[in-house]
Amino acid sequence: MPINYIANLIVKGPENTAGWKYIRKLGPPALLITLLKLYFNGSNNTWQRDLHGKVYMITGGTSGIGSELVKELAQRGAQLVLLTSQLEKDNSGAVWITDYVDDLRDATGNPLIYVEQCDLSSLYSVRKFATKWLDNRVPRRLDGIICLASERVPPGKQREVSTEGVEKQLAVNYLGHYHLLTLLIPAIKSQPIDRDVRIVLSTCSTQAVGTVDLDDLLWENKLYPSRSPWKVYGSSKLMLHMFAKEFQRRLDEEYKKKKHSPDVVSRIKVNVVNPGIVRSPSTRRFLSFGRVFGLLLYLILYPVFWIFFKSCESGIQTIIFALSCPDLLNIEGGKYIRECKIVDTKLRKELEDKKLQKELYDETAKKIAELEKISALERNIGNKKVKKGKNAKKVKKGKKEEAEGIENLLKEKINGLSNADRNRLFRSVFDDSKDVYPDMKHKDLTEEQESARNILLKKLDEKYEASRKKVPTKDNSNEKKSE
Image (tube, rainbow, N blue to C red):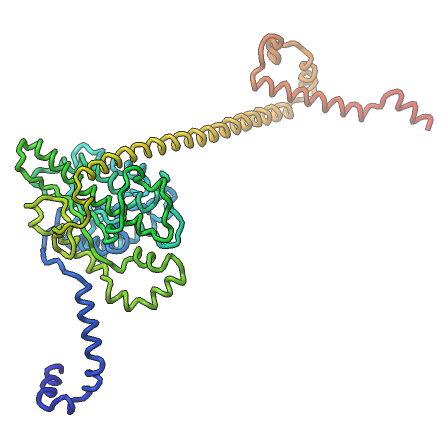
């Protein structure tokens, strides 16, 4: 059909071709939109790599580009370990994450997809996961760690903090990934020398507006910019980029010391990837200001966003390039990759300052150590209070139940006695018998003896009151006669 139409257009001319006026009117805008869409979609990865048997650990793999990347890697046969905060103690998100993984396994035909609890906004949760991962006699295989988890606060929102009281964007985007990777150093270094281990960290163009202040690294003293939270977000991404460079250098130094050769290149590569502006859930939340009215505005402007923003499928192309390109093995790590290309141009002076990167690395380690100590103390105090309260309740409840049990048992025994036995028991209250009151002037009674004594005294009072009602006194009898 298109061939016949084009032939008719050439032979008979545009004026004699059906629909030409519509093509002339709508064709140029459609062509322009198509070209813009192709341009802003970015480059596609052309490298292919067999991932069967490879093991990758992924943060942020349940939504956005992370979800799309997980699907792509699973289809290529990789074994995936998804780190998520959905597996809370109350299992509030366990059902959802279980369905999500089951759907992934069915869609990709790959059963090797697993989930581990690791909340990046909690240093304690990160340490628990890392300890669990390292607590293995034989080191686990690990071919890569992909850090895609990101927290982006929309404008107008108040400061949000993590479990340790750190600003949420800095806690998740920087501190959480820093803590995870540094704790997993033994697992990374224990991999065979010939294994291609790749660590990929995701950054953003907003790192251009970020700042690094070693005196106030976590924005504890500075006023939080609620109207421009991208400054904090950019700072977290900038510090993550600087950390990646220093982390790569430290891994290289240890590898060279181990091999006793300064010219040996490590096969552990740490690279930073910029996927571009993607129509992800975090982008939608940011552009909609986290409000319903903003979401309606986002839906109205969606055709514009569709043209200028990448889809999640296009956004993962650079990440797959960083995992697949063989050229990255023969060069130093710590590279910045964008649009499936290595960017060699200078971006920020902080990214070229090795001394500042080292200071940032060391200062962050100190901050994390301080935060973990404070968090541990708070947990211990809280656990002691809870434990003490529970124990006190248990003891009080146990004593009460024990006393009630003894009292009920004695009541049953008393009710089962004959009148003669009851009389003897009644008189025994006034005896100093050791069976009932063993040396009570010099020794404290046991709980059982005290309960028995109280019951007997109570029975004595009841009998006394009953006798007063049944047997009238002489005064009372005289009054009745006179009446």
